[in-house]
Image (cartoon, rainbow, N blue to C red; front, side, top):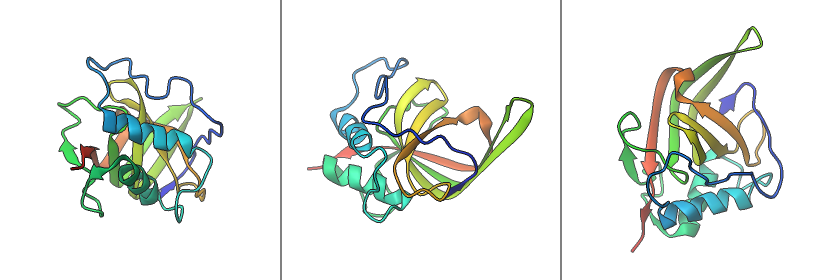
Length: 162
């Protein structure tokens, strides 16, 4: 669950969704399926509305191979490897902090799951998630890794199923 401020974007599409300006190769097909699932569910509740339900629904619909719990695919080292739209991010006790108009905004994520839908630049991602800010519908926010002050982020690359 995520507490704090958020931006709720309702609509049929996000301009630039899955447009990765930093990618040096085409988006893997399974990643595109996951981004498409998130886009199709913007403003809607997926399953029970838990954050995990969005990732589970996307992975299952894409036919991904995963453990059905929190092993969403192959673990990535986000400090060394490229993050792509369609990758899954797991937050564990993460705090982010940023200055906006002379004030400090802080967000706290306990155990929370999201999908990267746009790579704005290295370390800056638009993520789709639900069950944050008391909203159980899919919305997007921006995650800036430079704003992370504590906790653990785990990025996963979805693995195609058999």
